[in-house]
Image (cartoon, rainbow, N blue to C red; front, side):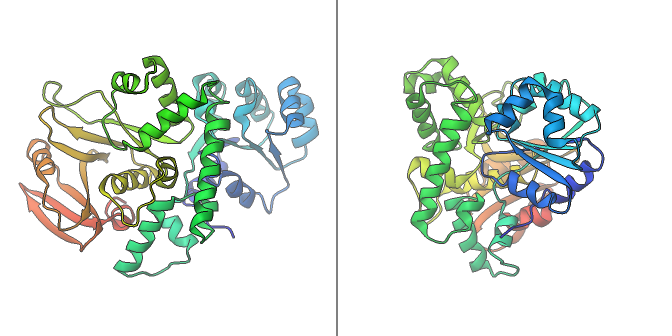
Length: 389
């Protein structure tokens, strides 16, 4: 069963303009399924670069590759092209020869300057994540819902994540098995292989540590000390995980270097189901940090560049969004009844935004006003679907 993805409209626009469209994102997020759906009525070829014959011909003689696989095709899908040596130069040749290519990659290596320098003006890049909440509702065939139904679906989505294969099964233990297999593949194949990491044990210790400390301000020096690893190793692991779409690092929003934190990132997981299988925590009720991570992942899937705000005296706002020259603070709470909004109040007094949001898991929508700023209490679905459009 195919579930339509939110990237479709953008994909259709750019694929008519660019000879190459790169769909990038984590393994099993649905890149191949999406592209196979788009080529159904086209004269096309689908080439998986895990196949050594396909990869070898591409690497050793691009003209023979062209003649063998794509010379008579309207469009060709090159799947997991990051496994090839020197892909940029060869993709440039094919694009300049009039070939139409849709490529996928489970690693941002394909987005490196070494590759993209060859493809300037020839490629459009679209990121595809695991199902967003809106896509998850489509998967569940849930067109209409009450507050209670939405809360239940958010709990399932936050607990087991948005990977298509996980969402398609109902058995809880099978969901966990699929998540564990997915994580093992991401670590052993996409991260270890792609980034030449031999010490899998230390990588897994690092990942486990992050899973138990989501949303904390990350000090690489402290992490190195806690895990008995070098600073350089910690930095390499974090870079590899981010470039493989396992984690996201968000950085501080600031205007005052003497009073606000300006450097250290916070680290979250892009999929909370993967985070939960790593930490071995599948809660019956969502807890604060997990829901905070869930909201962050939904904001990223919706295309927002997200920061956080914190002063050196401890005042904090979970997320800051900059949109259309506006600065929008977003505070995350489990309940709309939560009244601990000191950090949000401080931010409003300093930066005077026109609007702010308190995103809740359970509760009722409402509005209030502080110092001329309108504060909206909303659920995550309404935030993404209406208020931030």
